[in-house]
Length: 212
Image (spheres, helix red, strand yellow):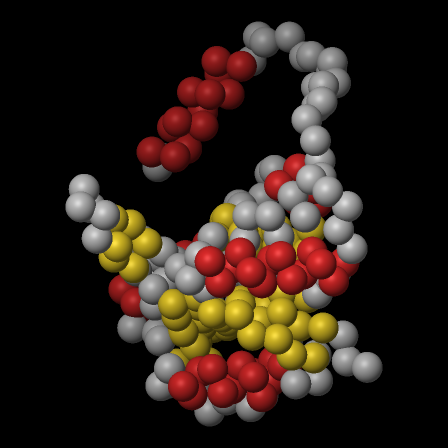
């Protein structure tokens, strides 16, 4: 039995006698701040992503494979992790070796991979945050934390919301949610910023619009 199973077992036993409470939770806080249209919301997302030092690109669905191929080539990526449900056409313009993610693949193996390409669950304009939920086109959390270069595709405007409360309405709390605001970074007491400590050092976000 793993440590995780032991801890969850203790939690279940502790809650076994707890009465069920179906009382709805009052959520009186604001769900939106201002009245933005879809285009303004996407612009705000791009602005805040850039503030967090993510590299933002825009393209149509038709242009996406060539954009991903160019970004991988610019980073000199010779290998790329591919979630099991990612659209294979997205990588049709790259010569990088595709590394399929499997449960048996270790962190050390992933550390030798140059890049990862994923979709996302939702993007939050006000905070410049990308949320992954472990869906087939996003894969396990591990593949977006170990490789040094992450390319994330956001379908605009359908996957973009203004605020965190609006994002929560779209997300399943039972899924493994990963919230990403820019590349991984930390700083010491003198505020010297270091990137890539506990996640990818380079985050590139592609805002993909439907083809005309």
